[in-house]
Length: 406
Image (cartoon, rainbow, N blue to C red; front, side):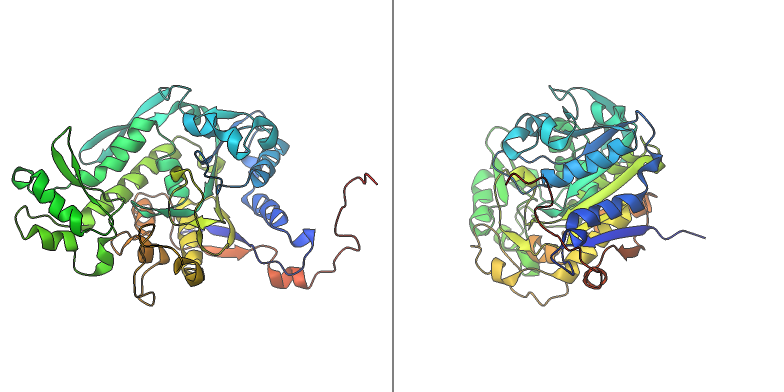
């Protein structure tokens, strides 16, 4: 009999304005239920997260990072936060330091991004990926993720945090992002720069692109929102000259490779020593790689944790679907910044309403489940719910509980 994975959920809604109902206590409870006791004394624990770039501060708050780090230390583990070298080098500007996190911050593939292990993969056209060496050196993986949108797959969660973040720059940017160009979608011999300009002119997102150095055309799939299910303007402008098309296969290839890449990383660890935490806070339309502040288009939801990567991302997506887009926010955002499906009542996931119907955020979990990484059927267990904490007896003193300086 297959065991249904448990997903622990701490809502940002509290029953009382008191510390015992706070998000920190919910995180503590989730960590308790995840059972960190599999972390052995002196285990090296990689806390994989995205530290952001430049002025992008909407990542997992360092306050929570330190909470996770302290929980690892209580088990006798030696934690280190890790991400790509640029994000690590600039992390101090966003408040992440060894002092604030409570542990070292280490470049995931070395300071020159060249400390890697070549891993063979089973996806057509791609023979290997360069996995980050410092990550693979660890005994334990804590996959600490900020859930947000993403142009290529519509959603960046636990899968994306290790599927892209667990590899060197060339693998991440060229191989994995480049897989969308694997399946042909136009006749290159019939394409010219002048013809491509016609396609670009009608596209509201400037997705058709021309590379002057390579003298080649391409569709920037990250930008393409597929005209939100309507008539594809670039296809119409092509008038059949090059057979230009917008196909689900190209979008799906990115998500399939993400599942393959994630499995490669997860297979490098003992399953009992892998933990996933998704922070559904400050949920923005685009990836943290943008390096700037962005409007949160979905209201804060809370924290989700599981030992099953498929379950944790599926549950996160379900909670986001239940919450829906914040219409008062998205109505204020100009189309030059972000286009939204004009029919918000259509039965699409909120991320598809932003990034287009062909970018189904559940696809990566389906590919992951097919490869044995977990189950999309899960049991959601809410910890310290608003109803529960509302019924609890509050302490007499609830503020300024530390040493007084008066």
